[in-house]
View 1 (cartoon, rainbow, N blue to C red):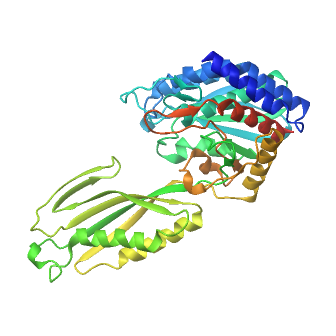
View 2 (cartoon, one colour):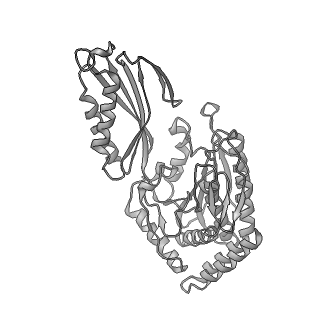
View 3 (cartoon, rainbow, N blue to C red):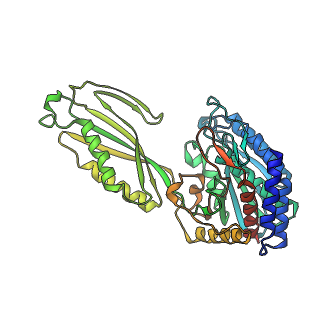
Amino acid sequence: MKKCFLFYLISFSFLITNAQTLQPIEQKLIKKIEEHYPAMVDLLKNSVNINSGTFNIAGVKAVGQLYSKELEKLGFTIEWINMPDSVKRAGHLVATRKGNKGKKLLLLGHLDTVFEPEMPSNPFTVLNDSTITGQGINDMKGGDVIIIAAMKAMHELNLLNNATITIYMTGDEENAGEPRSLTRGDFIERAKQHDVVLAFEGAAGFNTIATARRGASSWELTVEGKQGHSSGVFGAAGYGAIYEAARIVNSFRETLSKEQYLTFNPGIFIGGSEVNANFEQQRGEASGKTNIISPKTFVNGDLRFLTEEQKLKARNTMRKIVSESLPGAKASISFQDGIPSMAPTKGNEALATILSKTSEDMGLGKVVPGNPGSRGAGDISYVAAYADCLDGLGASGKGSHAPGETLNSKQYPILMKRATVFIYRLLN
C-alpha cells in the first residue's frame, strides 16, 4: 500500500506543481498535504474501522473523539453538542477558530454511517492500486478527513491565525433525530453567523460540484371504502379502498412524473379487510379475502423537490387528485416536512466559479454544477437559505450506503489538495 501511495504522491506532485498560476503559498500547501498524506490515510483507516451507524451512539462518539484530538492540536476549540436521551442520537462535534480575516466559513461533515453494528462488517481494505473499501469511507469519512487535512496544512503555515472557521460534524445525518428543531437547531443558528457553508459529502470526481440539492418530505394517504361482497364491486357497493388508492397513486404518476427534479415514491402500500399500518416504523400488517371489497388502504411515500415553490405546487396537485374520489370511496392525504432543499442561487454559482478557477490553476480542468437530481437530501439543505453553499467536496468512490462501499485512492489526494487551496482562496 505504501508503494502505491508514494507513486501517486509523486505523480500528483508533478502534475500540480507544474501549474504556473498557483501562488507560492499555495504550492507550499500542496507540499504539506503530500507530507501529511500517509498520516491522513491512517486517520481515515482508524475512523472507518470504528462502527458508527447512526444508532450506535458509542461508535459515533468514538469517531468524534478521534477527530477532536486532531482538530484540538490545530488550535480549534472543541465542543460536543449532546442530545437528550429521548432523541436516541449521539450528538454533534463542533470545532471553532475565530478571527477577523476573510469570509467566515462553516465546513460540514457527518460522523455517522448507515451501517449498524449488526450488519456485516466491512473494514478498511486496499483492493487494488485505485480502490479502497470500508464502511462509510466515501459517505463520508473520506470527506471528514479532507477537512482535517486541509486545516492541518493551513495551520502549519500559520494561515488559520486570523480565520473564522467552524467545523460541524453531525452525528445523525443518515437518520436525523426528532424533533428537528432540537437536532438541527444549534447547527442552523451557527450557520447563520457564517458567509459560506462547504459540505464534504462524496464528490462525483474532478469536474462537477453540487450547487443545489433536492429536499425530501413524506406523505401519507388514507383511503376508506364500503366493505361488501366482491360481486357488487363497481356497482352499488362502490369501488372500495384499494381501487381508489391505486387510482390516486397512478394519477400522481400520470400528472407529475414528467416534471424535472420532482419525484415521489410510494414506499408502503397496504390494504385489505383488516389493516394495521405503522409508518413511523415503516411497516404494517393486512389480511383480507378475494370476495371482500377492501374498506381500508394506507400508502406512505416520499416527495423530493428542488425548490420550496415546486414542493408546494406538487402538494396542491396531489390534494386535488385525492379529492376526486371514485364512487363509494373517500380519501385524505397529509404531508410531513423532512429536509428542505438547497436551491440553486447566484451565491452558490459564484463559489463554483472560484472552485473551477482553482481547479484550472492546478491543471485539473473546469468544474461545473452537477445535476441536482442525482443527489439526495443532506444536512447542508437546513442552512442553504442563510449562506452561500457548495457540496460534494469530499472523496470520490462508488457504492455509498451499500456493502462494499469504495473510495477512489487515485483521486483522493488530488481532491484533498484542491479543497485545501480552495479554502485558502476563500479566506484571502
